Picture 1: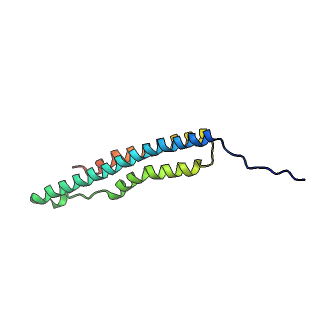
Picture 2: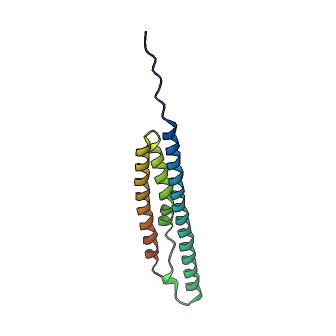
Picture 3: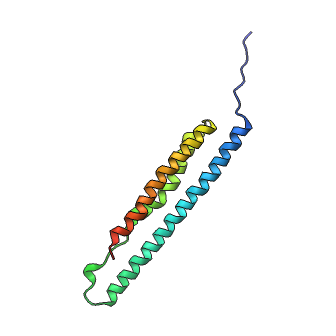
Length: 126
């Protein structure tokens, strides 16, 4: 006779804890994304206003500037990409590992996000 083994089931507490971690960090990453979208709107409006001012004055064509779209879009993409990567890495891990990976992902994404928040306005030099 062969012994039938049943797959090991994870306790509900572990699953509930992981759901809480996903929701909390999802909200934090969503806040980071909303802030990046606000930065995109503010920078693009500032560039448009500056260029409109130059159009109203004489000889300002050489000072015209363009919106750094690539950096602004990258700033928006950082948080969702970090969340998805952390989610994929931790989907079959224990709760402690899930918390650790999400904390590291949030710290890394926050560092890149803040660098871009400070870097993009320095490109414009109004």
